[in-house]
Every structure is written in structure tokens, then in C-alpha cells.
Length: 149
Image 1 (cartoon, rainbow, N blue to C red):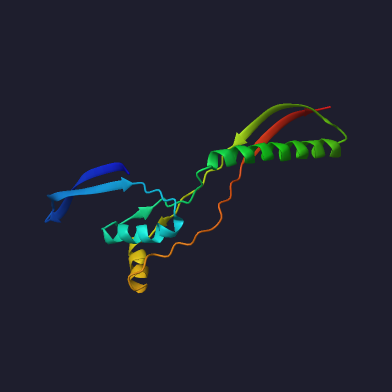
Image 2 (cartoon, rainbow, N blue to C red):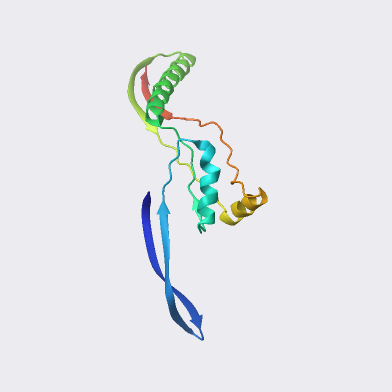
């Protein structure tokens, strides 16, 4: 699915002047696969078709939202247990929970080098770029604010 199309004029410098020589187009597409074993094949096809930049590759789960909700419930349980332990250590008890908030954590996505991928693909004698699957870890962080008595 195309999510962006960018067109910009391309120039070459002749003397001290920029001379228009045409346009450069950039397409941003999203590819979603259910069969992760085909990821390398798809990358190889993209590079073979002229892709010069592949970035933002990520692996995810279709049921992420439900898993995040379950992780939030567990995180709140852990936060409450720790609040109780902290209060007990201070000779107090948790009186009431004032606030529970999700704390979002930013993450970065990496980019793959298409030239390196093409070289790897060629070295595989026509095979596809190797893409290894792994585990997806879903972490949620909460902040619990409580009063003590």
C-alpha cells in the first residue's frame, strides 16, 4: 500500500548554476506479511526493483492491543504490590490509590542498507536476503501514586 509519494526537482551544477535535469520521485509503501518466512524474499524483490532505502522494518503481532491491555493489568498489580511493600517497610499501609498512569516509552526503528542487502542476496546465488525471526516482548510501564497511613 502506498502511504506517500514525494516529487522533487533534480538539479545538476554546471559552472556556478543549477540546471534542472528532471524530477526524482520517492514512494513510501507499507507491506504487511502474515508469513514471516517470506520477509527476505520481499526485501530482495524491493531491492531488485530499485529500492534505494528500506527503513522502519518491524515485526509485530496482530493481537498487540489485547496483549498490551493484559500487560497493563499485570503492571498495575506489580505496582500495587511494590507500593504495599514500600509502605510496609516504612511501617505504614497504602491508604488509597490516587492515580495510575501509563508511562509511554519511545523506541527507534532501524534501517537496512539496500546495497548490503543486494550484495548478501547475490552471495546467496539468487536466494533472498536472510531475515531471522525472534521473540516480540511487550512491556508496559505504569506509575502508581498512593497515600499512606
